[in-house]
Length: 86
Image 1 (cartoon, rainbow, N blue to C red):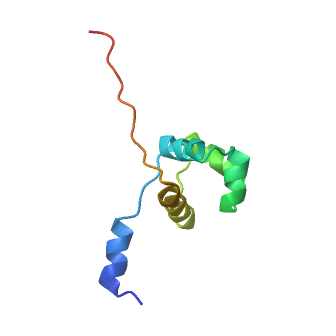
Image 2 (image 1 turned 30 degrees about the vertical axis):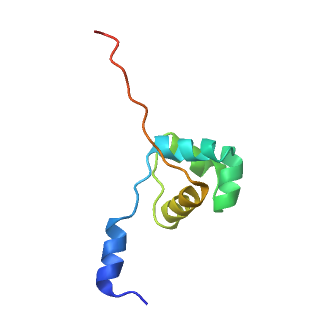
């Protein structure tokens, strides 16, 4: 059983999933929005809303995404944007 400090420490480490990260994870897993939704126990529309930035995964959904990402070896690195104006 965790003590209060351990629970607070874990809360602070919770990952905030961006729309780019959700899409990148889904593509890494080679899944459609519908299939990822089925695996997570949610609706395809919810996955779409995450990927379009309407909402962010939170609570159990964010935790499940983190577990899936860790177990699949997913690491997200944003692509560098090159300034072509120079």
